[in-house]
Image 1 (cartoon, helix red, strand yellow):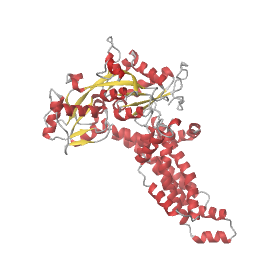
Image 2: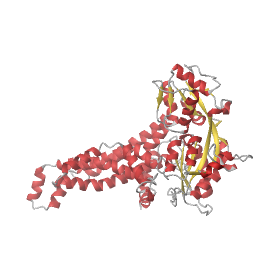
Image 3: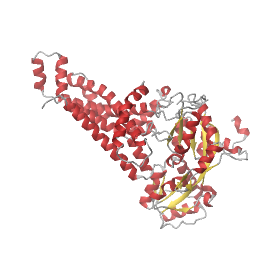
Image 4: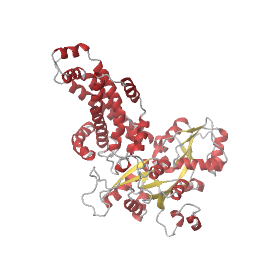
Length: 248
Length: 292
């Protein structure tokens, strides 16, 4: 399933990867940098999408409902924002290793395992920041929506609309954490390319780590620039999207 | 690890339909075989020949064997005979072959503050470094190189420690960089040192056996399949195809031909007129001990 998903999304990502790096002559083998850009984007985007699907409903629920243990859940989420990525990597490694509970799925050293660890890393910040955005919406907005005869769902939608910038920021924070993270993807992904230099589980961050390990700081820096450009591009796109259709 | 098809489509168009075509071999190995570029250079031949792909994970010998012990690899290429022997004795690894060798060298700043240059014995050189308390960078990562370093300290009768001795817990390339920046000595495999020599100011102060240095600095690499009797998910067929291929005259020639900066990094060892029985069993193994 996940593999098929990968093939489908890899088409536009391939184009993005080539467009980003095709203009410059890089000191790497053909296709190497575009392929690690594709893997970085694929893993981070899928992980952040899944995190968002979980985080935003959780944030909405917590923003609208009072329930016992709510503050405990909140502190668990806040603690999660500080999870060291290598620890998350180790936990996912134990889970997906052949000896672990998910061992039979053979996920070790795959992109799916990397998505799992990035999901764990990205979910807490997206939830916490979305929750802050939702609770930060002016109470008068809710009251006005209720006064106009809105149902609970209507009120929630109005509040979500008001909080969309905050939620976009939350998603970007999650994406930023996922794509810039090196510890866990190195442990569970294995930093693999095929022999012809096409990435399987190598991301920009693990590629930078590999270059630095070999003392090739210049090429490491080039990849660092590619990573920064990539994050900037995604940020710009998301900010545009959340601006879209709202004349202000 | 088995039955996984290659998504990148990097294989040749038509490959012989052998039983393992389309499968993926997971190889855990040391940073030295990977970072020197050797594996990428020779693996394309294997991938084309069998229509498979090789996932090479560069971890360091200790971690590579640990991954295999957990059933997360099909085959290992490592360089620490004592750890390989333990791996075989515990039943995890089978069909070990000697693969290739190079050697270790003791490198340090050209100024050589401890004065070890030209020492005939590696252990003397280390003892001198310890006496002078000259900075020494240790891998400290349970790798093959680290294992060799600990053997050397033991032979030198010295317990390293103190401010001058720094464990970095990094790969060889990074350890060389740290030694370079701190003007420290370190033990390196010749391959990684050659591949990085252009970037750093360190120089070889004690040669290994390839250049006439002491035999204790020899650095032999072995290849082993993960025992399918212990881990039934191991892709044993493909692992054995890989071992057969990499110990074949063709692949051994490719290893010998692999150069960096005009220097040969690895010396093939698998093709020999002699039977070399020792390569198949742990050192000191006797038929009697089979009934243990």
